[in-house]
Length: 240
Image 1 (tube, rainbow, N blue to C red):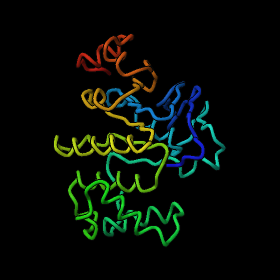
Image 2: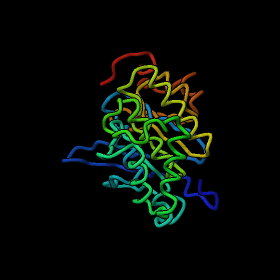
Image 3: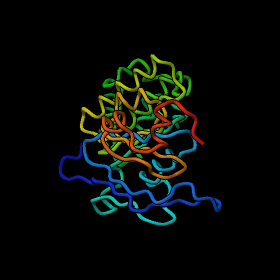
């Protein structure tokens, strides 16, 4: 972890995103605080993934702002993102991690050892020489998280990391998320799985139609949602 200083909190102030003339995210204002696990909840099409991409800087807001505490030069490399479908190179599992470290500017002499440490941390050493793209879906996702962990980010963004996985693989991923948090990372993840949100979330951001309807402690959200939309979502009703 980067112990010297922090780039958090991350603040969104009336951040909106318009794609092809459609407002897909509207007037988002919230704060991501250090050490918390924030879960972005909402039905399909709510804008969860786009909100995560705004936070990570993959897209820029059409209006409003997304800002880190530290100067822009400080926040690059301080946060990593794991996608719903892992993006892996046509090389071994170990080489995928080594490549990520190289892109991040890690000293050449350290890369192989750091890659090995990441694979060992998450029980993936046996896969080190295997072609990453021949691994199962769950194994590929575990590798993607281990690769992100190797970069020692302060913030880890996860976009629906278990949406296509069976319960055993989902449990393994959730244990990795907990381990990353225990190692000092601030977690921000999207999910439509209410059980997962209850297990992993400290804070909840509830989105519907690209708008933030509720934000606050997860315990409060699940015990007594304030909006009709959140009540319907928790009740299992279809929202559109």
